[in-house]
Structures are given as structure tokens and as C-alpha cells.
Image 1 (tube, each protein chain N blue to C red):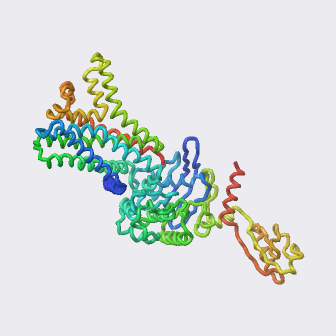
Image 2 (cartoon, rainbow over the protein chains, first blue to last red):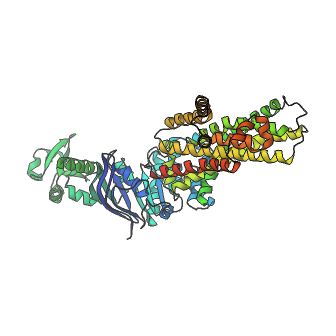
Length: 306
Length: 276
């Protein structure tokens, strides 16, 4: 695994505001990584730093082995970027716009039509971008980010304005690129959506990296309880503590369903009892902490430190 | 180099699409034709040097109109793209900021040059069509007039970029652009004349006057065209000034070139320091 992006002790100040503080991470190729945080947590600033649009106040950044803030920056040819709220000049048509960006990346104009096809814009290729809807502009933005088989894809809120069907095909495209070794960085609020896609999650809050790891690792660190739901037979409802034991808090939700918040070390023991021979349990449903809950947890624990 | 051409091509494409090219060309052609035929009325059909009269009237038109057109297309070039968010995407491509600026400059200048060439060329063509005899000297003066007009446009495009690279909002850029136009085209000359009248030649020396004239690109342009050729200056009533002015045409031309290059360089510096 070679690193595509290396960020070392990077801080960025805008006047008095410290947008990013002492952030370190490496992004290896062939991974999909989610960059998660509130508005103003420093996500967009980090993306701009990686693109070389702004320079760090301190620390160093390497993208494909080069300093992104240095002039023409040849590595940008292998980099796709989709800004938040992407916009285009409204006078040109979709295919003219894409052809312009293709030329800047030294891609042949033959690449334009297939890309428009891929994002489902073929029918509107000859129309002025000014007539496009929000979702169509987002698709055009995605098409330009995909120009030239990028090795790095930086996508800022990529699925806003996309309908569910297109969202699905969007993630299919991402997965295909990742399979070819592209590093995909997704910055988003849509946490549930990212949960299934991202192999790794970086959580930012107020310019500081508060958590970094795969979803499993984060669950391990956070030690958040797993929610277990048991559908209990009528006979078992009477004396729950008797057969279940003193394991975690439990409550009854709608009739015969028990909900238990099990801490990680109790989880197995609890399941064992619930599924033991003779236990009055008809069904088991287990949900590990979601990214949403993990995110909230890490934010809380960081706030508590302040 | 290739990046500059790519950006320039896109600017021209946009100019054609949003009808900037068409509008400026038609405007310049219409005004040039009007001036040509109204302007030839006083000299009548005997006009030996019909084209020289046209040069005088067209260069006056240039001084008013070309700086305005140039500022209109250029003041928005950087700050506008930043506000619309298109600059963010463009700069994430393998293109340096100075290349973006030069590409835009080449594109905008090409639009302006095309409009000037076709618009003013139409006036000369109409003159030829009416059967006026035009000698080689007049043609040369006419060619110089068109060339220096484009140069004047280039100077104001560069000034517009400088404004665009420095300000935070489009509205501010537009306001400053209008102020610059008023300043250079109207107020500067009036103020200069006022000072000269009050001064009565006591403290403002010839050298100082020359310097003051070079500090305004429109004055450099005016002197270049109205006094550059002997025939034209006889018509323009500037003959007196031409004799006292020690500024030679090459110096005036150099001043115009400097007026295009220096603001362009400053704009490139300001743009490269800007954070998005």
C-alpha cells in the first residue's frame, strides 16, 4: 500500500479563526474513506489544503509525493475533485463544459460522450448548463471529477441533490474506481449512507481530528452498547431477570419485545442466555452502534475534554 | 502555453455564446458608420482625405467606448468566477493561476480586437465603397489607429483584472471599474486643463506635463493618434499641442504597452496570493 495523501501536523488559520489544528493522517490507495464532521469542522479546509488552493499555516502536505500548493502541480492530472455546491458557466453546453475540463487534463475529447453517458446526462449533452437542474449539475460535476481515471477522488458532499437511483449508481462507480486502486475521500453529513461504503472514518470537530479508524475499530474504542432486541414468548415475560440475569439495562417496547443495551463484554454472555435451550425467546435482533451514534459519542467525549 | 490557449478558447466560446462578441461588434460598427457619414458632411464630397477625418472621429469614439467595454468584460473575470464558485473547480485542475489570468486576457483581448477590427473596418469599407480616394499614408494612419485602439483596450482589460483580483465582491469591482472609467476618460483631462489654466505655465514644466499625459492611457492614445500623423493633426486642432509636446509616437506607444503589462503583472501577483 502506498500513500496517496500524507498530512503531517497541519494547522491552518484564517486570521483569528483556527480552521484546522495539528491534524495528521495518511490516506492509502484503494480505500474509501469518509471525512465526517459538522459544518465548520474543517472538512472543506482540509480538502482545499489537499488541492493546494490554500497553504497550511504550519505542517506539511504531500499529494502523490508532491507539494500541492506548488504552481502548476502535475499531480492534479491524477486527481478528481467535486466541490460542495458545484457550479459551471451557464453559457456553455454540458458537453462543451466537459470537453474544456478534459483538455485541461490532457484527455482526448473522445472521453466526453462516454462519461456523460455514465452519469446519465447523454440526453442533455447539447443543452446549456444554465438550463440544468441541481441534480443534473451535480452529475456533471461528478463526470468532470471522473475525467482521466483519477488516482485520488476528493468528493465534497457528493450525493446532495441526487435521487436514490442515481445515488446507487454513483456508489457503484466509486466502488469500481476503488477496485482499480483509487483513493476515494468522501466528505459528507449523510452518515447512514457512508456507513456501508467507507472502510475508514475520520471524524473532525472544530478543526481537530477526534477519531480515525475503521468502523469496527471505532466501535471498539467507543465501547458503545450494542442494542439487542428479543421477542419473548408470553411465558418468559413474567420474570425476565431470572432467566436473563443482571445483564445491562432492559426495557419493554411494544408488548413482547425486550430491548437491551449490552456493553461489548456482556454481549456474548447475554446472547448465550437468550438462545439457551429452554429460554423463552422467539427472535433476536442485534444492531451494533451506527456511525451516527459513534459520531455523536466522539463529539461528546471531545467536548467533555475541553 | 497550451493551458493559456485552452482557457482563451473557452473565454471566446463563452463570449460568442452569450453574445458579447456580437453586441460589441455591432455597437462599434454602428457608431463607426454613423460617425463616418456624419463626419464627412462638413468636408463634403471634395474631401481629399476622407479617411483622416474618420480617424479623428473614430479615435474620439475609442477613447469613450473601448475603455468602457474593456472594463465591462474584465472587472468580473476573477471575483465573479470566485463568487459563482467556478474558480474553485478550475484551480483544482493542473493549471497555474497566472495561466488562467493570461488565458482570460488573451480571450478577452481577442474578442475586443475582433470587434474593433470588424467595426472600424466596416467604416473604412463603407468609405471605399462610396468611391473616396485614399492614399497609402492615410491607410497607415488608419492601421495605427486600430492597433493602438486595441492596445488601449488591452490596458483597460488589465486594469479591470487588477481590480477584480483585489476586491472581495463583484459589486465593489463594478463600482471601482465605473470610477476608473470616469476618472481616466472624463475627470483627468478636465482637472489637467484646469490646473494648466490656473497655473499659467508658472510651475508645471513641459516635462511635468508630458509625465502627466503619460499617466493616463487615454491621453497617451489621444496624442498618439491625433498628433502622430501630420495630416490627421491638421484636422484635429491638436496641431498646437503636437508642436509643444515632446512626446514621440514610440514613447506614447511604449506608455500604452506599459499600461497593459504593469497592471496585468500586478493582477497576476494579487491573484496568486489570494486564498479561496
